[in-house]
Amino acid sequence: MRESWRWRVSRVAPAATETLHFTVEILEMRVSVTSSDVSGRNVHPGLVQLALAVGGFAIGTTEFATMSLLPSMARDLGIDEPTAGHVISAYAVGVVVGAPVIAVLSARVGRRALLIALMAVFALANGLSALAPDYHWMLLFRFLSGLPHGAYFGIASLVAASLVPASRRTQAVGRVLLGLTVATIIGVPLANWLGQAAGWRWAFAVVAGLALSCAMLIAVYAPRQSPSAGASPWQELGALRRSQVWLTLAIGAIGFGGLFSVYTYLASTLTEVTRITAGVVPFVLAAFGLGMTAGNLVIPKFADRALMRTAGGLLVWSAVVLALYAWAARSAWTVSIDVFAIGLGGALATVLQTRLMDVAGRAQSLAAALNHSAFNVANALGPWLGGLAIAAGYGWTSTGFVGSALACGGLVIWAVSWIADRRSTPASRRE
Image (tube, rainbow, N blue to C red):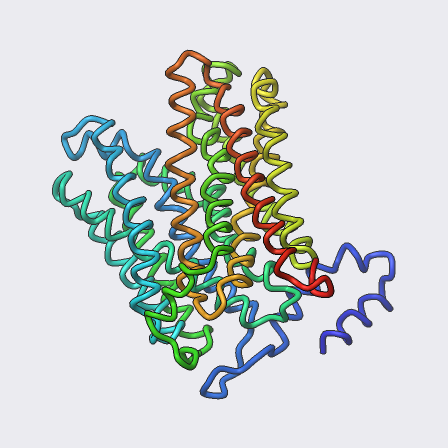
């Protein structure tokens, strides 16, 4: 079936074959059956990826939109904005705690059932957030909302990768994570608009609806996969005994922190340094989202050919474009280009997700979920170090140099992992 698609395209329009290649791949996934689930039901990878991406869209929308809804939330709950900011921290703590705990305790649960349950909990917690009567209840509900985050993306990535050939795993993971990146372009602005027009509670209510829709789509399209033979919490904990798992997580926790160092203070940099009006800021922020989306569409194709080299290349890329940020911030045009380039580096999350599949052995679920705990560590580390630089008087653009240093730190860890990998891998199996 796949060969016939490519043969027809190349016969009808030889010059357009390369341009249509990505479209053909999507069509292939929609009309072909890569596998069947345990009940013998046909499974369409493209539809499964779409269903899983809807969950990523819901998660991305609530994670990033909460920041822009803080002023109205603070007024409604009768607290100041710095205090309201703790609800973001509560969500992050939920992600860090929930990812490993859920992955270990659900070792004997089928992935489809687990994904449905995670989205149901996410929907309930966001619905309760919309109804929170005061600040303390809001803290609890945001913590509960964060619990499914890491486990969902980890398990969703494993399901998507299991339905395609090994040579296309990273592309499958990238399409699942497209939901998260598209949320930064569409979901967050819409949630912000809804919050301003109808109140911040409605934004959380809509996210709850999206999560329920995702649960239903997963129930319809995702395969029924039985847990692997011998699956147990102890087997999952075996990931923690693997040095390459820890090195891969450290690459993300340190190397990805640079992106967050810049993004957290981007709006303030644009108004204070670039001197653009508040109305233009969302367009520059959208350039970041477009960069992340483009990265998740393009970079995985290189990663499927040379995974570790692509990860190293992304870290070098990030170190350079982050170092250029201070210079680029002088102009709206140059900063938009640089922010787009920084967003491209976000594909590191997708690449490392596949890397963990290779080094985790039979402890796939825990390693996959921990990837998102690592990125939440980066989300805390980058803004903290960037804030220290700003407070020390180095200016808003100093976050770029902090980010570049973090990317270089990630590159050092990558080099350690690379060297250790080459020493333990036969020459015939190296990239």
